[in-house]
Length: 329
Ligand code: GLN
Image (cartoon, rainbow, N blue to C red; front, top):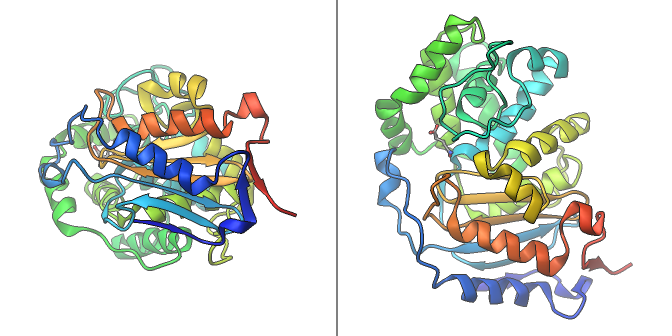
C-alpha cells in the first residue's frame, strides 16, 4: 500500500518520489540478511519481513510505502530527542560537562568512558544516552516521564505510549546498561538515583511509534524544529545544529564514518530495525525493517538510505543541500 499527499506539488527530476520509494521497496524486500535483536527478549518476537519506507517534506507532504503503520518501539532513536530535551533543560555548556560529542568507533553498548574527562563519549551510544536521560528535569519520576512523552507528542503530532512489555523485558535483562550506569555513578557523571535514570531510559526506548512517525520526527528536525504537519515547535531552534552534528558523527555507531562517507546525512538507528535520517531544510526519511547487521543497524534500512542518497543526490557534500527534490514555487 502506498499513500501520497499532493504529489503534484513535489517533483523529482525524471521520476516521482513515490515511485522511487516503491521501486526501492520491491528491490530490497527480497534481501534476507541480518537477524532481529534478541538481547531484549520481547524484541525477538517481531516479524522480520515487515518493511516500510516513508518520506515527509518540510512542507508537510507525505510519501510512504509498505508497513508504515506497523507499530514498534523507538529504541535508540529516542536518544536524539532526549538529547534535545537535555539541552533545552540545561544549555549546551552544562550538557557538555556530562556527555561528550566524540564518536567511539565502538559498539553502541560498549562499557567505555573518556579516560581523561570520565564523560561518556557521546549521547548516541548507550552510556551517553543514559547520562543524557538522567539530566532531564522534573519533580520525580512521573513528571520526568511525562515531559519525555510530551516531547514525543510534539515531534510525532500525537500522544505516545510506552510498551510496558518491552520496558519490563529490557529492565529485567539490561544488566549491561546497569553496569554503565554504575560506572558513571562512580565518576560522578550521574547524580540521581541510577535505577530511576535507567527506568526512564528504558521507558523512552520503549515508546511506541511507526515508520510514518519516524519520518515526521525527522522532518521536524529538518524543518528547524517545527513539526511540518502540525506546525508546532518540538525543540528550540538553537539546538538543531547540536543534535544533527552528533547524529552525523555518532548516530550509526561504529558504522558512522562509512555512513557519513556514503550516505552523507545525519541519521540514527535503533535495534528495533528503524533508521531515520534528516536532510536539513528538505526532508525527513524513516525506514523500518527489523533484521540488523553486526553493528545493530537495519540491513535493509542502510541499503535503502544508501540508494536514496545516490538517486536523490542527498549527500550534503555532493549536492550542498540542493538535492533532486524540487518543490514547485
Ligand atoms: N534499549 C536499547 C539498549 O539500551 C537501545 C539500543 C539500540 O537501539 N541500539 O540496549
